[in-house]
Image 1: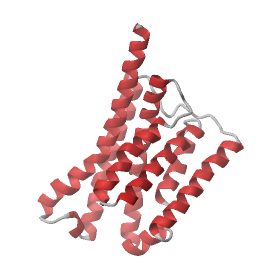
Image 2 (image 1 turned 30 degrees about the vertical axis):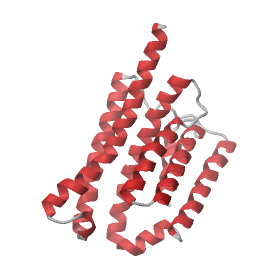
Image 3 (image 1 turned 120 degrees about the vertical axis):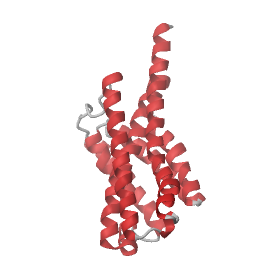
Image 4 (image 1 turned 90 degrees about the horizontal axis):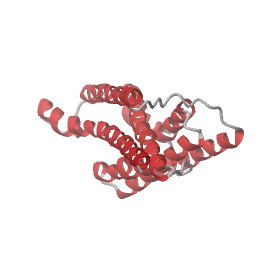
Length: 222
């Protein structure tokens, strides 16, 4: 009984860590909708190119610090090194990963009425495009932390490692948040589906972040 209680508490700690990662993502909203409008005297939608780039840089710094703290604390306090999983995967798992990537790209093309990366380059121009995709790299890192920690919590609680617990939480947090931040139900639904795909890639890749991260990043940006 004591052992089960200990596992339950440890699962809860991992779950809290995943929520901290989500909160880290949410810090951008505090920056964009409260702090910066007070500084610049205008809404985010009216920011100049320079102001938008500064916003992305500050956001990336905040996200990096958040990620670093969570990774280090998890390693020190929970003895959890998320980079220790470096197993190779077979052809079948690679096929599944790239299959999900292909489906993700198709959904993105339908949603954007074309390739997202091309549309954003045309809309932003080369300078904003570069900084936005640097921003995406850090954003992907944080929602992968949501996946990693929530997956650990789910496996501890329910003892099932073949269910994308992390992807489910991403869908219910990062995915649903898009409904409110973007004001579009379809965008939110597609983000929820994307979250499940990301969590599935993490499992299929045997939790090897050196495989999972670049695939999930491609799913997110393409």
